[in-house]
Amino acid sequence: MASIPADKHGTGSVENLPPHETYRHAEHFRNAADEFDAAKMGVWLFLATEVLLFSGLFVFYGVMRMLHPEAFIHGSSLLDWRWGLFNTIVLLLSSFTVADAVRCAQSGDQKGLKRNIVLTFILGTAFLLIKFIFEYAPKYAEGKLPGAFFSYPNWESPYEPLWWGLYWGATGIHASHVVVGMGLFIWLYIRAKKGHFGPKHYTAVEGVGLYWHIVDIVWIFLFPMLYLIH
Image 1 (cartoon, helix red, strand yellow):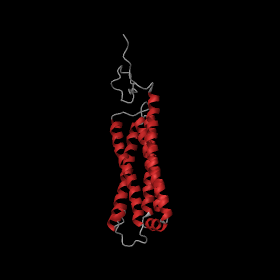
Image 2 (cartoon, rainbow, N blue to C red; image 1 turned 120 degrees about the vertical axis):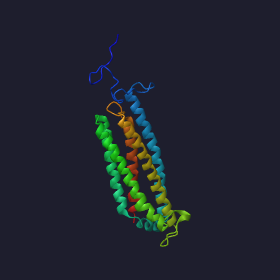
Image 3 (cartoon, rainbow, N blue to C red; image 1 turned 180 degrees about the vertical axis):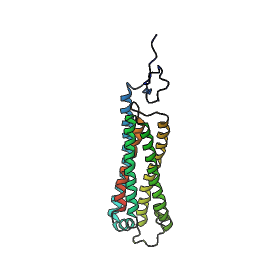
Image 4 (cartoon, rainbow, N blue to C red; image 1 turned 90 degrees about the vertical axis):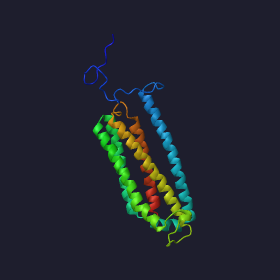
C-alpha cells in the first residue's frame, strides 16, 4: 500500500497545507509552467487591446489640438497641475506596492502579500477621491462640461467644449479602469487570506499586477498631455 505523502510539517497528511501548496494545473496543460505562460500571454493580449483603446484617444487629441490649439491651451490652463502631479505620485507608489505584492507571493511572504494588496487598494482609493472631489466636482459646478453641457462663461474659443469632451472622456475611461482594478484587488485579498497564492501558484497576482501597471502607464501619458501643454 502506498504511503500517504507527508506535508511540510511532517504530519503525514496534506490536509493542513495551504491551497497554493496543493494547487494542480488544469488538465489540458502539460504542467503548471505551461499554464502560467498561457495565462500571462492572455493577459498581455488583453492589455494590447487596452493600449489600442487609449491610442485612439491620443491620436484624437493630437489631431484636435493641431486644428484648435487655442481651445486646448486655454482648457489645459484651467486644470490644476498640482492635483495631477499628486495623483501621478499616488499611482507610481501603487505600482511599487503591487510589484512588491507579486514578489511577496513568489517568496511565500503571506503577510507582505496581503499588506501590499491593501496598500495598493488604498492608493487607488486616494486617486479616485482626489479626482472626484478636487477635480470633477469643481469643474461640474463651474460648467466645464463636454459638448452641449458646456456652460463655462469665461471661454476664449468656441471649440473649448471639444477640449472638455476629451478631458472628461479620457480621464473618465481611465478612472473606470482604476475602479475595475480596485475590484480585482478585493478579489485578490479574499483569495490571499485563504492562502491561494504562494511560490507554486501566483498567476492571478501577476496578471492583476500587469493590468495595474498599464493603468499607471496610461496616466503617465495623460498627465502631461492634459495638464502641462500650456
